[in-house]
Amino acid sequence: MPFLMKQSYFTFPTTFQAIKAEKALTGGEWDFKMVPVPRSISSSCGVALRCRPEDAGTISVFLRKTLVETDGCFELEDDASSRAWSFFKKKGNDN
Image 1 (cartoon, rainbow, N blue to C red):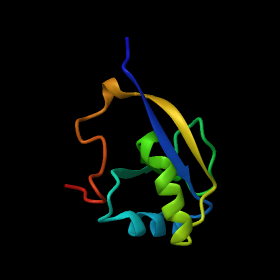
Image 2: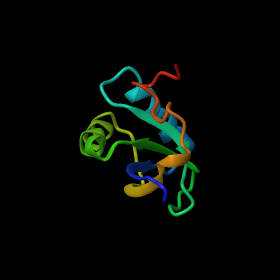
Image 3: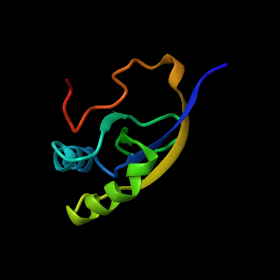
């Protein structure tokens, strides 16, 4: 039986806005990772920001304050059993 884990995904109208979000959040207090948009979510740019559901509200406020445009925020249950330990990008750092 797979282990399901809830994740939040922010989608963006353009790749530029996704990159702008990543730059704004890098070095900040939240764990996140830029990922391809899950198949169950539609997006014009194909890049999403994945974060913990408990961080989504404050990240949303922060993105609005830094003038990053989003298409929306979606919460999905992912199959975490196939994921590696490096599930999140720690504070915007690949290491």
